Image (cartoon, rainbow, N blue to C red):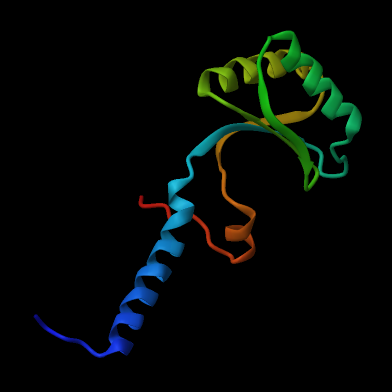
Length: 125
C-alpha cells in the first residue's frame, strides 16, 4: 500500500471541500416567479400595489411561496409553473389599465450563507 505524507491528505480534503462548497448553489432548484414593476421609471412599487397583487392571486386560489418588495419591484414566488402561468394571466387582466410590466422568470433559491460568500449557480448554456 502506498503511503503519502499527511500534508497531502489535508490538501486533498481541502480541495474536495472547496469543490463541494462551490457546487452547492447548483443543487438548489429554480423556483417560478413573477416580477411586477411600473413601466414609468419615476414611479416605484408600493404597499398598495403589493396588496392588489396579493388580492388578485388569492382570488385564483393560488398559493404564493413568498411575495416581497425588492428594488422598486414586487417579486412573487410560486411552487409550480402552472400556478405562475395562472397568476400571470390574472395579473395581466387586473393591471391592464395601469402601466405595469409583468415578467415571468425562474428565481434561484439558495442559502443565506452561500449568498454572503458570493457563491452563485453556474449557467451551462
